[in-house]
Length: 445
Image 1: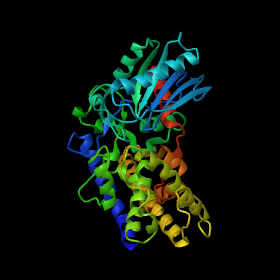
Image 2 (image 1 turned 90 degrees about the vertical axis):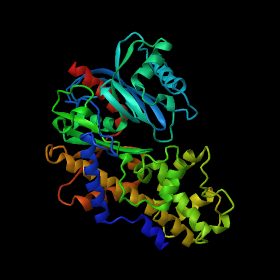
Image 3 (image 1 turned 135 degrees about the horizontal axis):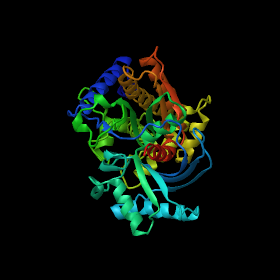
């Protein structure tokens, strides 16, 4: 096991190197130089807390789609919330299938809630990288989280959805704001808390955004005029990469068979869709070396085959992964139950300990890596906006994995022992952020 431990171990020096390189990549991106961080100006207005009205939020994530209708009756007050959620169809391979599904769900929501005779402003949270030309216009840069609809690349996603809405005669809803889930977490929390300066997602994927001084961005990065002193920058930190960064053989195996091979390398070390997968690969190797569970080698237990269901299986194993790392019983009885559900009916205590340690090593590294890029955002802002030290965070990994959160905070404390970064859950941030962004745009018009 010692070689496995070494593969996933990170020291403070390792983390400081990542922070330094992330800051370097951030600056390169802001100045239009070659960078693995896209550093996309979002044009999203930072809410004041005074916005009022009734708005719709459309939240397109890596797995689910949500539509939210929210009344803001008076400044700082959130009224009745109505919402629906559905699973995005993974068999969507064309623009018509993917964006048509969104338009049809939106029309159904509008008619179900008897909103067809009202003129409604909507915000769209689109959880994939776009190059924004304005707050309501952005071209898709690329997919992540298992999606790969090539004909959408380079197209304006607001226009793609609007065209589908027109096809089905849905004309009373106007999308006035385009953001991503990360920006949504910032905007949602900033409506209530003026100290929020960062928005972060730890879920199916991972990303971070922060408030940047507009004058720090080179002119060629800005596709339209921004008169605001500050602007929200979407870093797309999942793509962070530099030659000194060490990835182990399991990371390379995942990258090799992933749908977006060679990209989103940092995301593949952190996000929920990959944590279970990494653990499965490690256990599979230990089985082959006859360290544990070798009698199940010919069975599908901990299968590492990249088949059509493999993303779903990794998601399922992530939930088990979390339970495994949280088991504090003397005999690891919760781990035993999980193994029995997987078909392992005769596990030994030593095998259960190995499984728990593997899952813990993977999630600890994930939490530490997540803390490094968070600290990079904080240090970038500290020279011009030190009052904005709160990070609004959302995502299933942050919400549901107690060990991840523990190691994330541990990493933050390791890197920033004096200047504390406040972490606050921006619950439903991506969906509510879409609503608040529509309100903020309408308020400024």
